[in-house]
Image 1 (cartoon, one colour):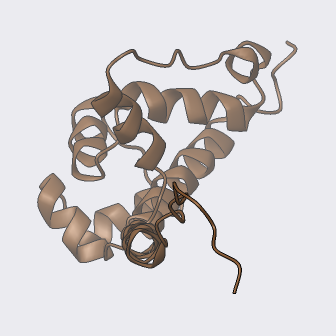
Image 2 (tube, helix red, strand yellow):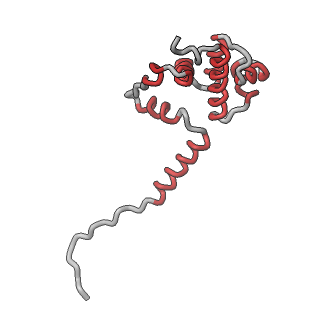
Image 3 (cartoon, one colour):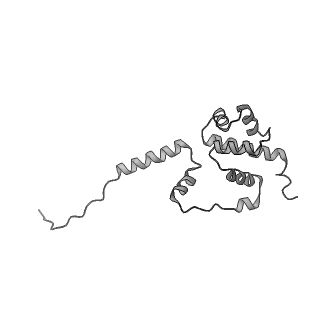
Length: 142
């Protein structure tokens, strides 16, 4: 039993709850807001996040949808946290679609971080001086 430590039911519940709470905190959403959008009570979600309650697959999918997280990513992160060597070695494939690349790249950023990047980009674009034009012609010494 090479994964005996990580496969105790209590440690799996605690790890899953921690991942859900981390994702909710990263999205800067309240417990009540996420619970309502997933169709759960805030008390139940709180117990799930603290590792005190089990969660059904249907409720977990509703919760991951409310957090804008795919169930596959949630399970992969859970496997990594529990110490699965295969999950740690797995790399995501980078899609060819630029829109999907942008979505993946910004998925872990908080909304205020995205706003800061956008504001800084606008600032840089506005303050960039145009390169000096090379004059063509003769120079006159005075």
